[in-house]
Image 1: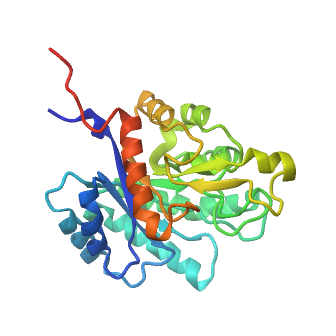
Image 2: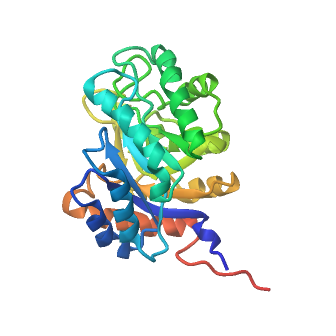
Image 3: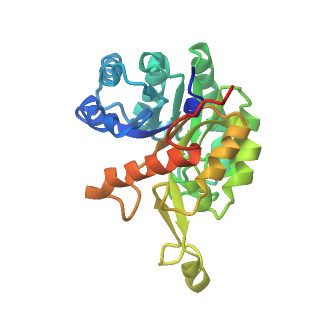
Amino acid sequence: MPNPLLDIRIGTMVQANLNDPAAYMRQILPLGFESIQPFFWQTLGGKDIPRLAGELREAIGSADVTISSVGVFGNPLEDGDKDREVLAAWETIIANAHLFGTNIVSGFTGRVRGKPLTDSLPRFREVWSKLAKRAADKGVRIAFENCAMDGNWATGDWNIAHNPDAWELMFNELPDDNLGLEWEPCHQLVYLIDPIPQIRKWAPKIFHVHGKDATVRWDVIREHGVFGKHPFVQMRTPGFGDSDWTRVISELRLASYSGAIDIEGWHDPVYRGDLEITGQVRALEYLKECRGGPEYVPAAT
């Protein structure tokens, strides 16, 4: 009998730019992760992508683990040498996503640097209309990460898909069914936005979820405000932040979300360095509990 708990898998992210990401996967998979999102920072780093896909799937072997998506994080809208490599990386991963066993590729939209967000929309349409068509021809969905990367409405370097008002503009420009979001509550809490009603509104466009949370430091806000010299928010591993992930997962289920929540580590100010995997495993256990417990219990007949 299929396990309906696994309609939403709890996994983690793996840096595909590592020398041997397959070896890293073999180390962490016994810890209980159910899905993996390999991701590239800007370029593919000279990786042979078909070979890498084979190595990662071989590392999974017969384990009940999926590759949920492949991430490409950079700025494909600008025209520097690195930016052109980012665009080429998107094209390559879209063409080869099936070799990883996934139909989702995720990352930043890119941005016209140093300009108001709306100035990026013409370039967004130009670049992503072609990528969306390329992806649709391959049966691939594109999920835009919702991280501001320290940008805002007035200026930024990486991404326009960090605010629900921007999502409205983006999807008005390109209403393609295979364009959606890689969503997480963390980046909304940074804006002091309540993530729960956002799920209800945007669920049809949520293709992939990152397991990352935040703690809003209201004492700092009351004394120093936002965007002062004292950080008013901290990015946290799930289980250590403000979000009620039982509600998050319940809202996703009510909206018929089926996919993965992949823990995005390397941000927690406490569970990092030697405590990185400790924090991720705690998040894995916590998110499984929020999903309904570690094990599926069939209904009585």
